[in-house]
Image (cartoon, rainbow, N blue to C red):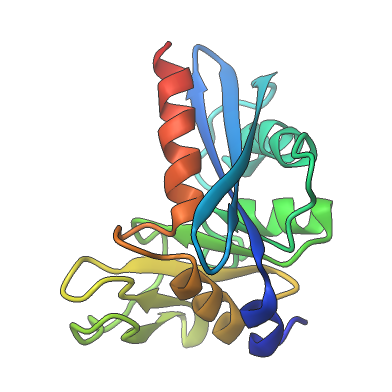
Length: 195
């Protein structure tokens, strides 16, 4: 398990986003330098989808492309953020868990919407958070990355505590709601999917 202090020392964080178009998974990994939030590198991968669309099992469709995109980076990231969920998943093992375990890198899920669980709305200031619980178990955090803007949903993927994961997401967030590594990956993946 990586401590909050280790997450604070990470200076190269990759964001991974996957779009599926015509049974092809298109993934982009974007490597960002902290604390500047400067984009250092991107890598892409396209893989045929070999698994049917089943609710709660999207990782099986998206993992091959996501894994290939991270592995194609010239520089190995010190941590990875995934546009999706980790423990905050019906089976407690979302894409962030699959990818983190495959890479053996500290990984967290950071999603724009809730998949499972209940939560009270966090206070308005940046950094405010509330526990995301499922059947009495804390499975994630509902985190404000910007003041008075809709929160994101952070959950553990691999080798990070929830405290370290939320600290990392905040360190990676600048002017936008979404952490910069994920924002850059999303913009590039969406452009490729539309091409």
